[in-house]
Length: 150
Image (cartoon, rainbow, N blue to C red; front, side):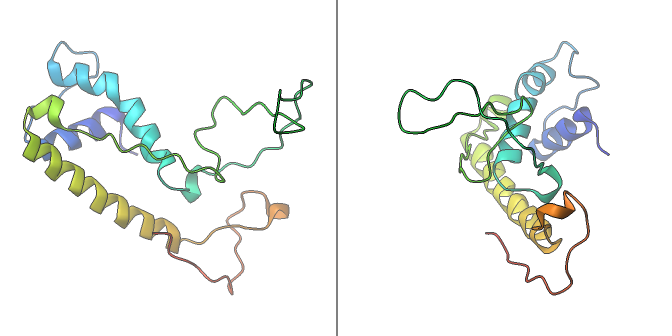
């Protein structure tokens, strides 16, 4: 599996920028990668219901009901990035901070969208476990119709 530095260097290579040895080195690119990697990674994770990132949990109702609109409240797990029933897309992927070039930033955003489309296709063709009794098992009925999710 690629390390954080490997992923950052892949992005920097796409921009034609100088690569880094670590996120803590004293360089502009390392500082930018260190400050933005987690935000960008989590935004990509939220951008699509990736099969490998789905987790089912049973939430206990909070003891205090919401002030209005609902009868129950639930505290989300600390590692929850997105509820699958709520769409929350982040679209602020900019290469401008590294290159100071709007055209490069636009080109990189378009490349990102193409790569994301490809990744979503691959993810959607892997199938999905819809039977709660199986938990997160890889066991999927062979007759399952696989829908592309773009």
